[in-house]
Image (cartoon, rainbow, N blue to C red; front, side, top):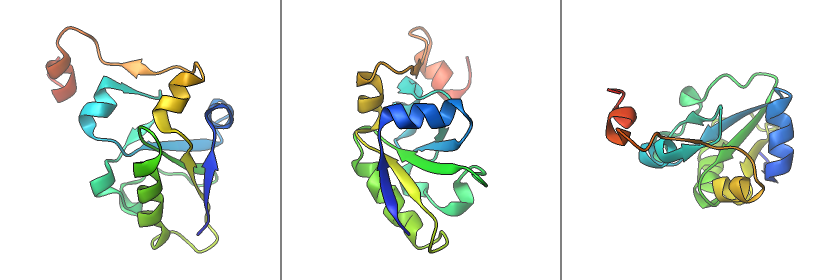
Amino acid sequence: MPIQPVNAAALNTWLESGDAVLVDVRDPQEYAAEHVPGATLVPLGTVCCAKLPDYTGKKLVIMCKLGGRGGKACEKLAGELPPRAVVYNLDGGIEAWKKAGLPVERAPRRGFMNWLTGRG
């Protein structure tokens, strides 16, 4: 299964056109603090095909903070996805996304723990 890097600008184009599904493999606290709009959280320790959102007919893109955990997630998926399937890793992770000036959703400053736990 080929693992391909994708840069933030290309990923943004894919997301805007509905051509990609983005999976964030960081920890729940990292995701809650800030994440790419529309990204689905599947922490690295739980990554498997059964946990992935439906990506039928779309590009599957994995992301983390800088790209390292994303690469590990891609490798974990390699044994489960069909041989010709391609999975993309966001080069530079959310840090590259932010550096490119692209939007992130952030937790509200007040009541962060309530927001994180779904109580607020």
